[in-house]
Length: 101
Image 1: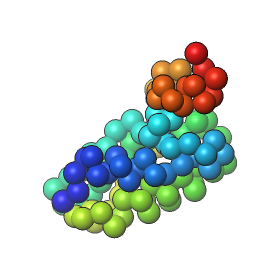
Image 2: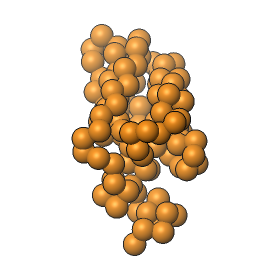
Image 3: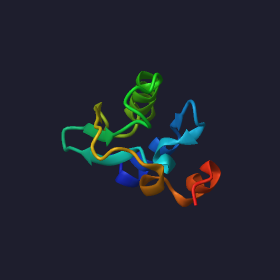
């Protein structure tokens, strides 16, 4: 069975296609839950509810995790609460790249 660290490492490889930054560094991943039956549920948000590339990010999350040891299915749950705010959710490196002080 994959560890949470392995799951997060894989999610770190998924980029927001518009910003070209990792979805984990952007703070778009709100949680990951792994069940004994091999199902992984990823709770995440997008930079905006109308993000035109949401389906691309969704499929990239599934692709990134699907071949991990013990992962049988990946369920991506999009949420809008709390609203994504880079000043709160993004890493310090991303804040600097976005010019947020």
